[in-house]
Image (tube, rainbow, N blue to C red; front, side, top):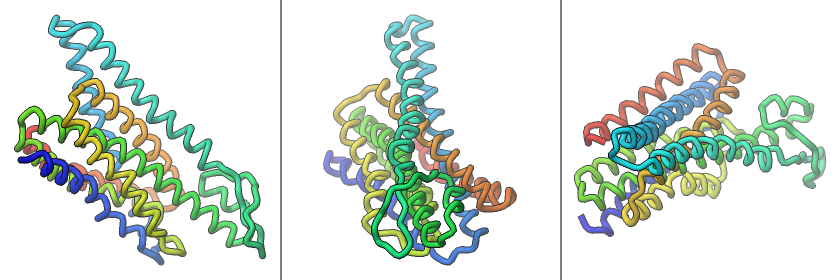
Length: 294
């Protein structure tokens, strides 16, 4: 396989995320359907958390074991542990900073005026209820939905960057068949990840803006291509651990936000059923990667 073919397939693997984004255009959804779709996305994100941490910890544990048996230095083991837990902290605390700085930015539109004026509000859905004007409630809910979708895209993008690194490093090590199978498997995964980004936007009165969906797709899927390029030029186990743990931390953060919202949207039965279906979809699509021996 030529290098340009690797880059082409790496970009395809990332941008299959756009296959799931049209879900955001669904309107007039009942609370049960919207709650189920939200829970389905949570299930996919939980699977991704399991997936990224299993790979990150496996590499970290291997580095520590190699030090104990004398196969590697203390520095390798130390840097691997720092990458593991440092990345986790960056993923969790980084999105905490993002939420505090951007998602709680004050604003409200006054009745009978198109002017935007500042007023504090909370990110949670309960914040909209403090305003009696239905238009004000919708504005708050809409902005919250867009920002949550972007946070999910950021978390998935960090995860997909690590996937791209795996594709590139497989290619440069000579494992061409593994690289191809990884591309197929990650491409299938990314299609389901698009549902996770789109889920907060379903059921809005107005269809989501096309420009926003394109941007979210680029944020979520683009890092796969970027990781493929970097992974094919530079091999580093510590960098792989770092980006996997950053992705895991970010995914934990957005999953907890979605779960908190889901508990208010629908019944526990629907929530758990949706999470189960999402987990099922994640593990089934992962079979292709397992068959590659990754």
